[in-house]
Image (cartoon, rainbow, N blue to C red; front, side, top):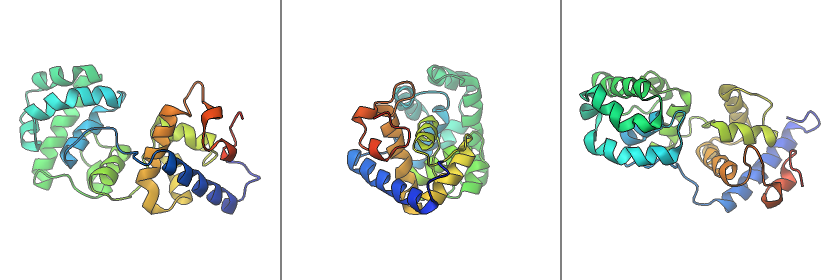
Length: 217
């Protein structure tokens, strides 16, 4: 965050960047394929240290075998491990998935709760996963999902000088209106994958390079 840029100026610049990115990626949405809040929760737990593309290859068979919390809670751990093995950390993910499903049955009648506090109380669900579920399954803008792309772009665009996801999110929610929090993450993720890449950002192809303090153009 540049000390020479006032909060008002930064807010105006952030709003301009958001509108340009929205025009660039009007169809930006959650990349994890799901047909219900339960499926999104499962897919998001699987996405830890794994690409969305890989998760989307695994979930069709996973959801066929375990279509709801009741089926997942009763899953044989060894069988579940085999289905999700390719996503990495499969033993820990298996424990979290079964634990999450059992908690849903025991505490929430098998349905995903709609509050951040209740969601983060479930096994395998932290603040980031809870924000994904609330924003994409329920349309509730409770926070901004901060993954590696969002964190990287937020720093490059001087939306924040923080390094931890929680601190970055705190700066983003103070800078952008609540109504755009979910879409903001989608836009930054799409832009990070397609243009503002980690090793070699394509500043010459960037629609917001004129508003980015880190631009090489």
